[in-house]
Length: 264
Length: 260
Image 1: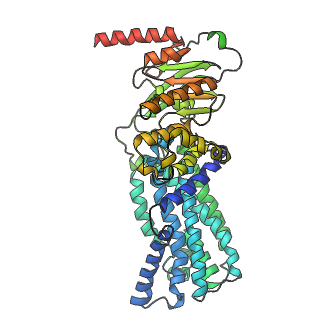
Image 2: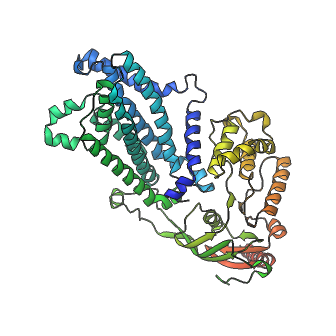
């Protein structure tokens, strides 16, 4: 069954059921359950905190650094988790795809959705930690819903693209893991966007902003860490990027849609 | 006989439930499962010759038919089932299917091994397109039919393959479809359950308007089918009343066996 809009809408129950079962099965048989999803960003946070603040003695302008770095690590975790799982999800569901008619796009979308629920859980923990650590909630938090929407569109677009191409190009699964690792350092996760602007200068900085996750993370930082509003010009840029990423990812998936099953 | 549609006698009234017009489904034969960088950049994965699993299939089936599909391995029987179920989209022609199709092609592929049997009923039901409210009302009947009352809260990981097949069969046949497509799945579970599943299939067949059966068992097809379709290398070799087509098919395959 093709993943066109009508079929997706008709099968929205399936998408919901996939997200729920994905969340349930992840925590199955583990003692800490959902908390494990938080462990990865928390461990990364402690490592970067130790290296940047402890060893290098930097990051005084980013204090409290743990909150600063978590604002970047959590959305990045959603992205890398969803993209890495999506590259192999279709190949891993071969039996299902060949036995039951359903729009296969729900499989990567289900991964994006379950990752997003985990992210929201992490975000709640971050908000509490920020309040305790000296970044009290402020009116700037009204930016968060817009950031969530942009993040969801960006991650969904990328995941759809790699899911479809990953079926035909099995190397992509391995390549994406490395690309995600490189991307983590190219995106202002462990450092701030202001530092990039100082180092690169205006024209290059504009190019740098083509990475939509730079703006997303800057947004979370302004809302949670600084309690301020980010540069209003970032909003139209981010909106355009989100729509473009989702549109291109969706188009790529639809382009290969009918061929996907034959490659499995 | 190629492509000719004989009048199918008494049940040709009204709008046909299955209407295939020049249906073609092709695969691309790949030398290796590999794509070069140049192909990737051109966004065309075009290496390898086209292989038509089905081509130029014209078929009209009406209410009340039980259609048996026969043919050698690789003749396109499974591809036809997938096209009828809308799993595959035709590359040529069209496949019009009027009514809710239910398939029993491969059983239990959709299970999440870490989830309980009960959660898997809901998930599998969602894959099959059964509405949430509807499946919740069916859960108890499904569990009872599968005879898994004691194990239903356990993760499917701990099930034996027979238990898994029973669960899948019970979910897949929980709803009575209008059009039923069966691809060699009539032997599930142990002997007792097999008799029960056979009875359930006969019930479904009685309830559905049109049945498509793929089987290598001639006697089984003879006992059930009104019509038969003989596929040969992706084309219709013969289509008509079951006994006629099956006789011809048997004669041809016996001849081939004798020649070997």
